Length: 338
Image 1 (cartoon, one colour):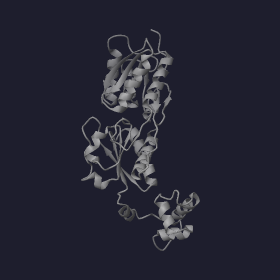
Image 2 (tube, helix red, strand yellow):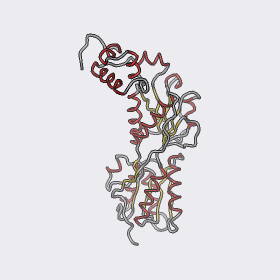
Image 3 (cartoon, one colour):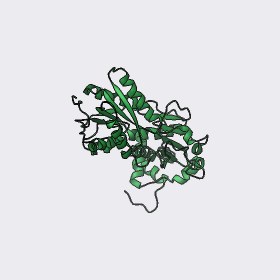
Image 4 (cartoon, one colour):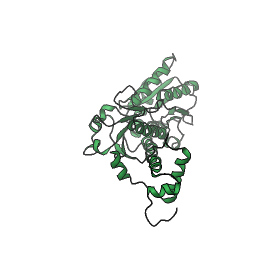
């Protein structure tokens, strides 16, 4: 980095790059596309890095009438999935001079409260994950653009939706178990009523519907390891033949299911197979490692922030559902003959 006798200005950057100040403003404001060439844009960015130039965001925000701040609303701060969503959103935001404020508003506990005296005065837009748009009415009002992640695409209150193919993920997982020979299943299903969990249950039922001798018992559970342990113990000791596979709505529930099996003297996967969903770090930390469905959480966050920026600029967000894939590990195997 070059030393200067004063804080570098946009004029210094323009002089270093051999361009006009207007070109510097366009490039560093990320409005250069179609106005200056890619080569010129890179030359401006390189000059800014060499000089250690930092734009005066406060002055720029005043001119634009924006705070350059987005709010990311999630139902939990301790879940790795939402941490990865935040990472993806904040990476894209930083590239455009935006900041992202993370805010917890649990699903199933009423509408989200306004985190500021007036969110509409403090924010440019909202990204919300795994909840319904009506839960955000107190924050959003009617004028802030809203992007929904992992939420019902038929909910028309949002400017854009970013979803992963949950149904395909559950189909892949269920077909894997069927191919192994499993026919008796227990579904450890989240007791929280939300679109993301409803889709998983519907896809499971739809996949098993075409298998005449398959049966599934649904056991609702709290979204915690202890809740899943209790639900799995109930599923494994209830009346009738014991299920040979436990299908869990996420990896945390699967960890609780494995704990229940051990307490009952059962071995995973020899006596019972267990599957998760999400592919959190936990999935490869437990023993045996979990067969699960990998969700591209960071890409969800990136796509969500990109969609919000598009909405703010009056552009149409990129459509499409993000793909998922099955990760087969050691927690699933062929059922033992009884």
